[in-house]
Image 1 (cartoon, rainbow, N blue to C red):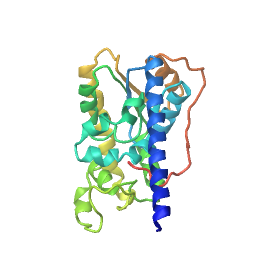
Image 2: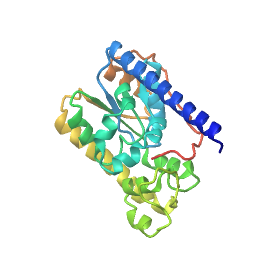
Image 3: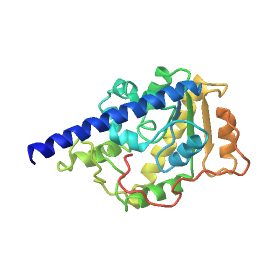
Image 4: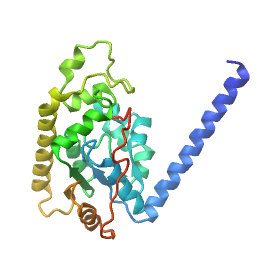
Length: 254
């Protein structure tokens, strides 16, 4: 690379960073003026309507943080390292109002979020566990979704990962490094159902009136009406929100 092209590339990078800073600042200011300071965390597992939930909130004027932001800022591995304040202090996090996908559904993270943001609301949408696992398998052609280290932590497969030294730890890369086939169905369903039970039990104790926690089924025809009532937005009866309902999305961070 010539000195001139290197300088041009550096200048382009600086301009992009400045542009990103001003965009994020504008979003943060907009968030304040909208009067929606309350944060909403979507705790739903991957392949359980997270993108559809994000679409629901975007169409009602919310600023939504999704997988793209998490991947860009390395939030999954930041969570894995336990550096939660790094996430919370980022401008992208501060600018957003709703958070879906990674790393909000990761094991036990809702307890940290509840403690850190005592006025936040939390949304958890479930689906039939067999349909959920079918979607998990089909997503990356019967390979684990996204970053293998993160996936192994979530779904308790670290013993398999440890047996594969060629797969690096704490690397922000999409590896799909382990098989995800029929033999894992019951294990994954157990983890999925256990997570639902644990989350419901936690909020039953800490939010007995249901002011902060919404639980619904993505297959329920009225789920969007119910969610609208929960967050105080009007949803037209019969309105549905489906984001890439059947399309496979490769290399999505879990």
